[in-house]
Length: 94
Image 1 (tube, rainbow, N blue to C red):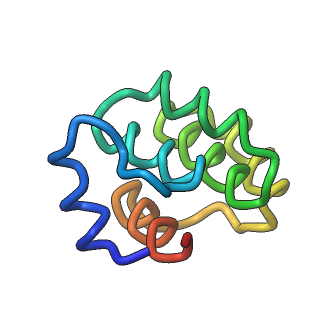
Image 2 (image 1 turned 90 degrees about the vertical axis):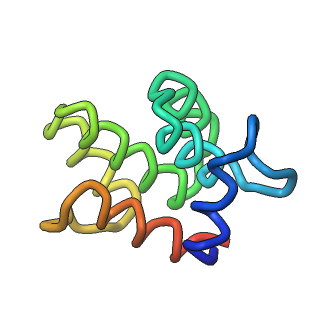
């Protein structure tokens, strides 16, 4: 997804129609609603959902739980900042 379009959507009151569950989860996280983001990430069994789930646990500070979800997503634990990782995930998702 285009990062600029994602960031512009944060001015809206809800995620745009057509956002996948992982993108919706990232949208809610970016808006500061970790609980809603986590709920959406848990509802998606895809590798993308696991990647977002891992990111959310990293945001939470739960490194061991995040590591589990990174393994499920087939991703390495990132060495980047949380905002850098958010950008990478958004850009990787459709």
